[in-house]
Length: 78
Image (cartoon, rainbow, N blue to C red):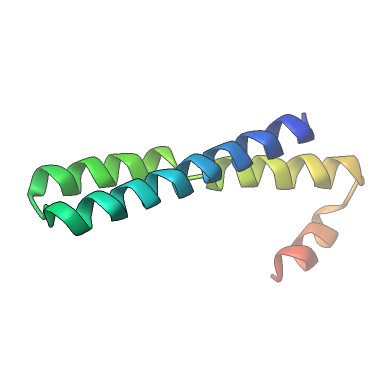
């Protein structure tokens, strides 16, 4: 489960990096600042958000090491 979660995060981040390079290349040539392109970018950003997967990964690791709530709070810096 941990490996699947990490693989998915890496896949999303790799796709995001490739997409940014393509957008950068296209933006330099077209300079498209229309609201439609912003809406597309916002939608793409939300699809590339890995925070839920990262939280799931954290929980899996905490469970793997049988950490207590107090230990988890220390790790989170609270």
